[in-house]
Image (cartoon, rainbow, N blue to C red; front, side):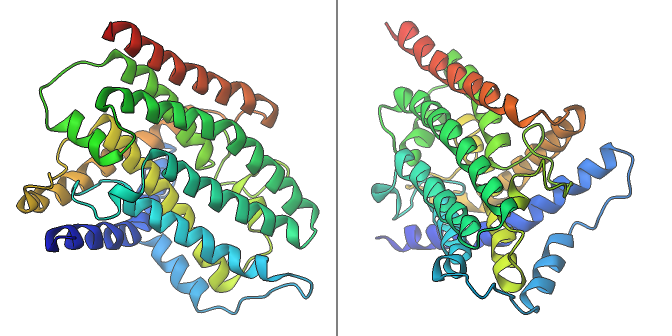
Length: 315
């Protein structure tokens, strides 16, 4: 492990933990502005986390250790996922041990733990939310894998750092398959982060919500960790999209000084992405839960179509 690699890995983790709530606040702010509403402060997510961490955690008497440990497991999985995504540099010590498949596995592990915890205390809404979460994950994870495989066909590797180096630091080329993969990834990202049209993060109606139904019984620091993990998941998916489709600005392993420009480039791209997400949610309407399988099946077919287009053009 080189010293520059250790620094880049440490900075990626710190920046992800620090900027994830800010990205959520940026999206919420733009969403309110586009809907002609009074926008919350950009720092509102930080204030909410501070308030929750200073409150007592109330836990049901019959809750098991799984219920208490699930927030820590999910938060750890999201931090590790952000650590293996090349957002500032491709010189990451964790890169050889983690590839695209391991990244999807981390998301799946976090989903399983929070779903089991929601069912652990036996409430109707928790069980309903767990079932819906597993339905979304069952359909979204294969689509996400196909998107990552579409990019891996170009770089001949499932390593995210190799994909970024191939797409960003080699000769400029047009990959039509990535266009289909980009649309599929956008659809998967909306579903995985419980955004419109799959779920509305601004509502608290029990019969329609996905994310909120999983965390209804949490409070205090446990709820703070889950909300922070949700922001980290949005940050991770945003960085995956930037790494696959807009990788320019990421520093190479042989040029650690380029990280001085990588951070402003990352902030700029995340700001544009947050605005586009808010605009997309503003012009979209929430669909019925029974239409979600069709939505994600379309994403899976688009991702597979992207792979087939690349294979046909490569001949």
